[in-house]
Structure formats: structure tokens, C-alpha cells
Length: 213
Image (cartoon, rainbow, N blue to C red):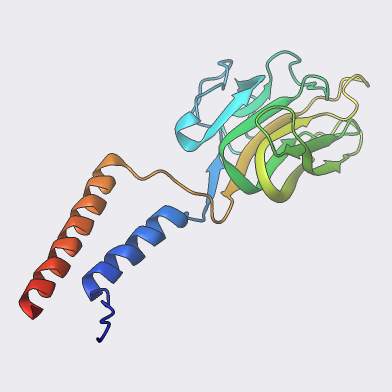
């Protein structure tokens, strides 16, 4: 008695490969938020939710166009104006895990600029932290900090010593990279195509088996 091993058809293999690519692959690209499409003095909140980012304690600010920023807007702390603290930072929360996040601090002086990345939407563990200090009151000084690591879901940013003198800070140009391998949910229309492809492939295999018999 001979045992015949059925070999999958090229059509079925193509469908399976296509499904694997769609369900496991993520488009790896850097997204940038310049904050220039908001309205000055409005809370940022969920304004960029469609881009996968929600902000806490952030307000659009007309203090834009400074060195290192993009005119006309930047953002500042909602509760502490230009003096965000570690106890009450500005936060960016991501709907998908990120591998790196960059942000530019504008008018960075001796009170400094710190960014901390976490692996949870709230609480969690610190993934990475970066700190920089300017000189005096900052003026035209700006610095871009980048935090990197695995499963970054939230970044917090603030001044290191916000209570010293009148040195404030604003922020601009958030750049973030979705972590490679992060799964995405296919759209309903795409799911229909998947189903149609599988049904067609299964039907083709049954038809070929019948012809062989």
C-alpha cells in the first residue's frame, strides 16, 4: 500500500505566505509630529490619536519657530506652563510598542531637559532615560533627546530643576518608530480578501483531487 503525501498547490502556498506577511509584518517607518496643525492654547490630548499617540498635560503653544523647532507651534505643560516637573510631566502614550522616540527641547537652559521611556501605558519599568543641560536661560539653545529600547509605550518629559530662576522650556518635533514585529490588525475589507483566497485555494485543491481519481 502506497501512501501518497498531498503537496500543497502553488496557489495555496501563495495565499499562506501572503497571510503570514500581513499578520506578522509591520511597516517600519518613522512618524513625525510637528504640532503645527493644532490650535494655540488648546489641549493636545487625543488630537493625534489617529497617528497612535495620545498626550497628557500638553497644550499647543504659539511659542514656535525657535531654534530647533518648526513654526508656528510647539507644546508646553498644561498645568505648569513652561516649567513641567518630574512629579507632573508631559507624557506621550503610544497605541503600539515603539523602538525609539525622539523629541526636541526648545530654549533649554541650566534647568535641563529629561525624557524617560516606560514599558507600560501607566507605571511600568523604565526602558531608557536621557538628560541634557543648557547654559544660562537657554535662549537659542535646543537639544534633541532619543530614548531607545524594547516595548516603549510611554515617554515622559520635563525640566530637571524647574523651580530655579525663570528658565522655561517648550517641546517640538516628536519622532517615533514602531517596534519591528509589532502585530497590526487587518482591516475588514482585507479580511474578506483573505477568506476569499483561502476558499478559492481549498476549492482548487478539491477539484484537482477529483480529477486525479
